[in-house]
Structure formats: C-alpha cells, structure tokens
Length: 234
Image 1 (spheres, rainbow, N blue to C red):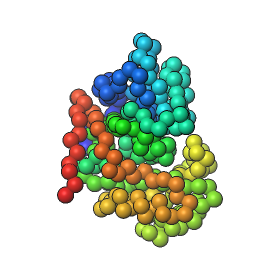
Image 2: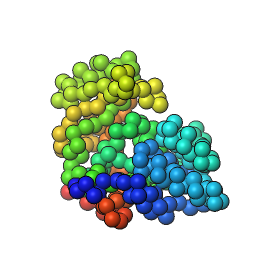
Image 3: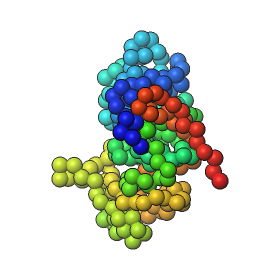
Image 4: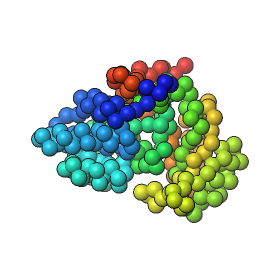
C-alpha cells in the first residue's frame, strides 16, 4: 500500500468524524485503543461536551483515562449485557473483514468488548489492508505470566516462534496482568483454525485474530474515507 494511505492525524480525525455518524443519543459505545480509536474518543468527547448523552466501555486503562478526561461517562462489563456500538482500530484487515489486532497490547479486552457489541466499526489507514492475514508477519498472543515460557516453547514447536514483548528492558504487562508474545507468522491460510489451535495451549488467554465478526471497516485512503465491502467466503 502506498505511503499516502498511511494514517495521518488528519486521516484519523476524518475516520473519527465518519464513525460518529453511527452514534446516537443514549447509546453505550465501546471505546477502542490506538491512534484511530483515540481520535474517535476525542471526537466523541467534543460531542458529549455539546450535550450528547452516551456511555463508554473502554478497552484499556489508557482509553479509560482519556475518556474520563473528556467527560465521557464509563461503564464496565459488569454493568451491561450488550452494547450498541464498538469503535476500534486494527493492525491488519483482509478482504473478508477478518482482523489481526493487538500491536497496541489491548487485544483481550478489545475482543471482549467487540463481542458485546451489536455493531463493530473498525477504523484503519489503507496500509492496514492486506490480501491475507499474517502479511505483516506478526501475531500477538496474550498469556498468563506463569505459562509464558511453556507457551513460547509450544508456539515454536507449532511453527510460530515468539518473542516476549519488551519495553525498557522489561516484559510488557497488559492491563490484565498478563504477558504478550509476538509470534512470527506468514500468510495464514485458515485464521479461525489457527485461533482455535493457539487458544487450546494451556496458558494462552487470547490471540489477536478477530475472525468472523463482520465489522464495518472505514478506510482512509490518503484523500478520503471509504467503507470496505467485505468479500463473501468461497
């Protein structure tokens, strides 16, 4: 994908404005994590300041802090059985609308919130569109700390060597107190089957594969927003 399709601040703002078209008064809205999702939260905060009455369900502590600072009322999964809308980003989007997420580290909470939503809207720059999932060579997996090393060994045995995600020389800790492993992958022929295989490893609590969720994908192509029309499965 050409560099001009990479998501700029202006592109993120344009996607956020388009996503706001799906928002209605009184809704409960999932608030995603990352550049595009944060732009949406900021745009939503402006609408709230203008009188819009909504509540948010944040996918990370960072997003929760941003939302609170903007005056957006928050709920937790304990408070709701379903939410109206979830707006988030993605790291890869294939032609069917399946996703890889988790480069920002919030994949497990993002998946929980997305599954609670009646409608899932994904905001991306055009560089995130791939012909097949795995094209960027990385798949995040969240694991419990006790099992981090056994999980790494098992992933490598399956052909997916993984590295612990580190920051400033120490392992990254998710908002759930877990660790992140970044698997090296190639094109994934069957994302649903791989997701099931990896989640069956004791200690794995989630993968970055978001399959079969049928999101509305809004894409910034460098000049305008467009809606991805997912292909039907063969």
